[in-house]
Image (cartoon, rainbow, N blue to C red; front, side):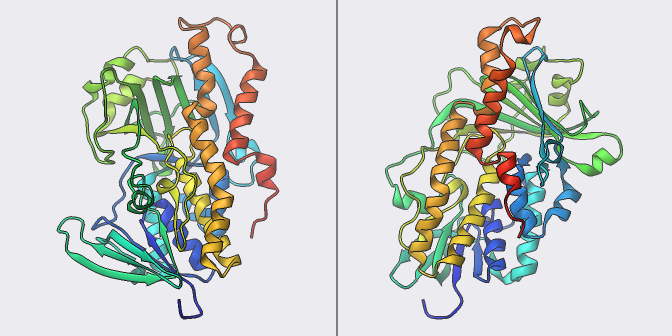
Length: 421
């Protein structure tokens, strides 16, 4: 494409797409973002950002703002379905990382990124209500055609040097290159998610998981303003295998359900350190998400077009890796496009850096990742245990935790050795 400044078309204004826009802008590459929805609002519930992702956001100058709206996770702890401890480890700064791990409301993070993109690139660089219909990629440029998703009316086109598809698990671009892939395979499990104000538990900055894969409860605080007044805004997830389900509804971040759908399964889970039934009852809204992912792909990049984030590697939300991996994608694609002026070659470099690691995480998460220790305890002691060491050894627990950190790319010593500029 003629012109001295490279231009990127980014489809999708989620965490991955917006972070990509910021990294490209920092690298001197012109970026324009196109989003299907007509209004970007702070939707969703809580997520975790691992230290390697926080490092990338810190390079963008965002750590101070993140710290204002997130909780620095101090520990991760696993428990049995009876509330008995299995494994715990410090996280983030408490574990010796140079960067924190943050627990944050997904919507607040997305709005922070959206505000920064609008401020740094200019509000005219973000186009809402622009759904990607089709694209044409040639030797010198790529052109994308957009429409209004509600009315079907044309919203024009954009031409650039590269098209980055960050439009999520139902990506138009992914479907174009893999038309026979079909719907995301359903695991048979649902995530029921809510947010409840409650008393702080454990350290007040703890992330906990209790149970086992087919019936699991996750909870962690996400709001520093609530913590400042002595309470805790707890993000929670009830992960349940539901009997008799053949296929899930379309994945919808806004599908509300009543606690009666699943709440009775957790009614006995009232521990002396956390009252799980009370958390479920205390939520103003509960959202239902079918647990789905997709098989790893053999390639993401085709000429001047590539995939990023959930469009490239949707994974089960295990190990706090979904948003974190999209953020790492953003940094990697910006680095590749900066180092290599030939766009197709740069995209091949990006893919060579990111495809294999994310594929390993997708597959590791299907095997429960670091949560495998909970399944082992359930299998070996389904009626509870007196002494944990009679069920699983400390060495086995340490090996499970270390193995996943290596797969997910946040081994502490390797990460700490990375540059800060």
